[in-house]
Image (cartoon, one colour):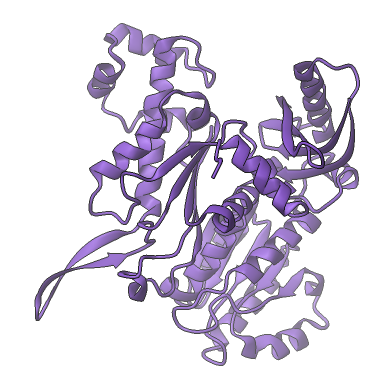
Length: 453
């Protein structure tokens, strides 16, 4: 059998290979899954996933024209951010890093001190981002911070995304530096007050990831196998969400996994709240590293009242104890599915709490008012559910709709919002595919979500 494209998602624990025909049928063909072999050579897991794909398709041979890939192997993309003012340049750089699919491991604001430098070293970052100052505004702090990070000699990529007025002296300073090959300079991520310019930094983070970051054993050989840049898997989910925004309007994606829960939104604010939304990015991703239904199972479980859980599952104490002691990410019995459903509910609710803005009560000379604060998602027309629990469990749409009904003071879509599932579980692969075949990727993604309009 011959297919047009294979897209591999090489994760820290699982490698997935999705097959697509993109010319005649524009369709998802099938999926293969295997354990990621990070400790030996990731190509072993990739080959096993392809073998599993062949088994699922009931074929003996498989040929393909192109292969693309995303990756979160070797722990994903670890980033530290240093800026000037937390609510301004630091926040802008954080938004760009999360938007690109990175995991933020340390953040600092203002001049770097010794303990900041120690924590940057302890974070073992793959990328260090330095920002600070609007264009032609304050420039000393960002330049001094950059020099202090250079002196750490960590030999990891350093991206400067601050005041443009520093560009000349940064280049002069790094001319003879042993760290000169680590430095990249991009457009200011916060060029003027209340304006976030995150896409140039996002693009360079992806390029840097592909060129420098893929340290899992065998990943260099995977780079030779694929036909375009490898990007972080969470970044590819954002690519797919951005693609959907172009096609169907304001959209939010909720992705519950074994270790994390990510929320991606690409949405403009309402006319009513637009004047309050300056400085809030249209594209936003939040990642909750403590919310997952497998790796973080016990963390999520500890936050649920045990008696309430017994009532919701309709089981007795002994049965609940047995379910917990024998917990598996792949539930088989009705009771196991109910338990994973409750864990998924907690992950979704808490992730949305941290992503969505709300109405803040303030008192003025003309009386009480409600001022929007944070991301306005009232104009979102479609919510996409992806990630194993949200796709494979029944009626997970209800989790989101219940949350909307129960939180009237948050800047959420209305109760008639369309909630769809990524039925074929291809959203991350579609994000990668869209980098070359944008219109075709959109068509396949709509089919996965059963969107016909």
